[in-house]
Length: 137
Image 1: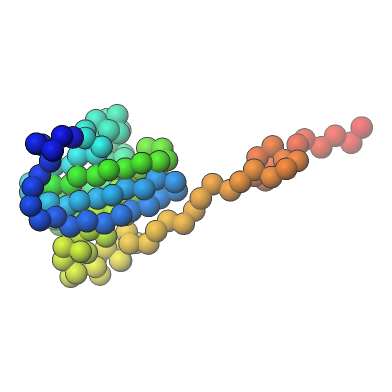
Image 2 (image 1 turned 120 degrees about the vertical axis):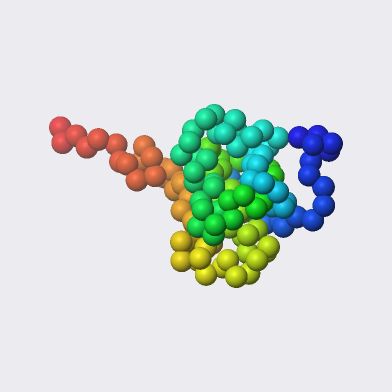
């Protein structure tokens, strides 16, 4: 996204994280457009409606769907982790815009950082916990 297409003026900023994805979210007053890494949200997620619904969840919970334009810069992880990171960032940015939205977001569990990470592979095992097949003879 070039500087000429970037919305100007006041915005609310927050960072969201999920797995190894980090999303830097800006909420501008607007009519509900979502831009992720310079593309529309649907383009970025390859038309996967599930990921779009995940990232738009904070707006549905708070009823602020048409009030903000979202500009996101997201790095790392896969599509699912990125969608979760964007959702976390949007939730935090909504609280920065209006603290009264906090109880609704908290009850929907959108403010908690999902701490689950991929467990590392151990020596002598095939994966983190899967052992090689046991043979008696």
